[in-house]
Each structure stands twice: as structure tokens, then as C-alpha cells.
Length: 170
Image 1 (tube, helix red, strand yellow):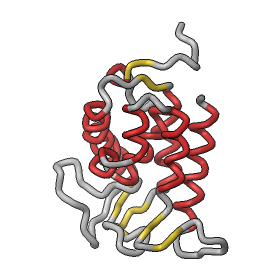
Image 2 (cartoon, one colour):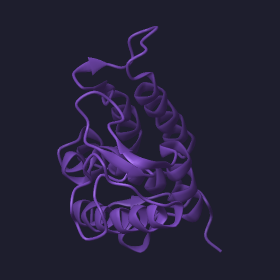
Image 3 (cartoon, helix red, strand yellow):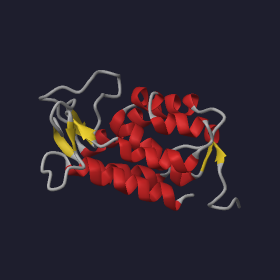
């Protein structure tokens, strides 16, 4: 069996069950579409912004827990294809893959492609890629790392958690 510290070609990885559960737990389940932070897109279920057929979620949409899991898995599958294609020569630990996919689920594969994490991984600088996670601390134009902030403190807390997990994998 391969060591947990061994990096594997990204094309051979997929989001682990632990990663999926962590993502679903972080997102929390909502039956009715909502806007999670100012200027964000409507989400439903476990933070899904799109339905399985590709239609965007809109206010008034509803889901059940089972449909929400199916919707999240469909969303993740599409994002994983784009994520893996963007870094075909990169090798990652499973823990790194899971946390970057969690980031992609939150911010999108399009944003990933222009992110500093993406650039750093392509350059082989895994530690700097981890540090780059802390650059993504804004929501709706607000700096979520502002002390005492009540607007989007969860965004900053999650980036700090991802950074810690990423550094632990190094």
C-alpha cells in the first residue's frame, strides 16, 4: 500500500469519501435556495449552485437531502474533470486533492484556473500553493479576515482551515 505522504498523479485521484463528507458538513444542508453571502449565487442542498442538468439554481428552488447529495456529486464530478485537466502533470497527496477540490466547489473551476494555487502547483511549489489559499478571503467585496467581522467570517475561517490542512500534508 502506498504511503499516505506519497504524491500521486492528479489524473489518478478523485475526491475521497472523507473529502465529500467534509465538504457536505461545511456547506450544511438547506432545503430551500438561499444566497449564502452578499453578491453570491443562489445555492440549494449542500451549496450547489447548479442542478444536475446544468441549470443554475434560482431562488424558490427546493430539494430533499437525497437529491441534494446527488446534485452535489454531479457538481463535483464536473468540477473534478476541469480541475484535473488544468494540472495534468501535477502530483498531489489525497489530502491536498480533497482540500483543493473543496476550494473549487466553493469558488469554481474557472476561478481555480486563474488562481495563485493553480500557478504554484504548476510550478511545483506546493508550500506556496498552500500559502496562496489565504489570499482568497473576500466575499461580496468585503475582506472576511477583518477582525470582528460578522459579514463573512466563515469564509476566512475556512481558508485558515484549508491552509492548516494543506501545510500538514507537506
